[in-house]
Image 1 (cartoon, one colour):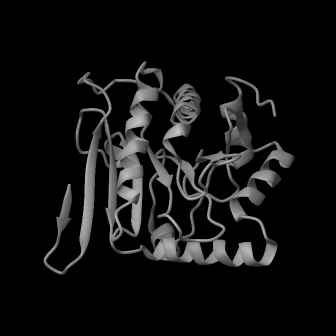
Image 2: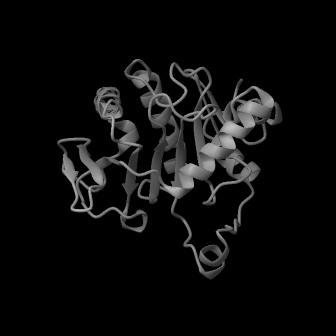
Image 3: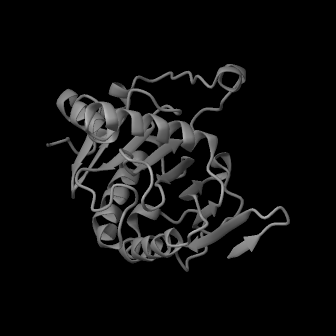
Length: 243
């Protein structure tokens, strides 16, 4: 749905119905249709990225009321605007500066370091790597990063099968550690075509196991009760990491 506002700001909002099963305990990772679901999602992203006025586009899933879910039926969302968010502006500036200085995208360099460190790695396969980064907003948070993306700014439809499998495995690990109904946000960070030199797309899993309080809101600094190395170890217990 494309909706121009009175101020001239353009917005897009689509709700992705993930299954015909209306059940709050529907398990996303075990769905037999997860590959077809991601083919649909990436096709819609491809179409929306072709819109010339859209500058910010994101896919996200809010699982559980603590994660902001307002509908019981399993779903995710794609939203976009003609404005660029302050957070993306800061990230893009850093990505461009890093690329000019080092000649390598910041995410590719980070992935190299995490694979060498190994203790924060969770999974490596299907062309993707999953790890618990040193700096993330939520305890037990995790990033899923493509090792050789076809398009550095957004996943392509051809990557739907491998991305779906890695997401399924990652969420199975998450549910094994925290329980089937543990709340989380799942976010696809991407950019529009022809923008942001040095940016790399990735998926971020943000467990909602604790709440932000005064310190976080006052300083935008997040307190973690769990080291990322310990979080990665807990996720690896289901299946060891083999590079």
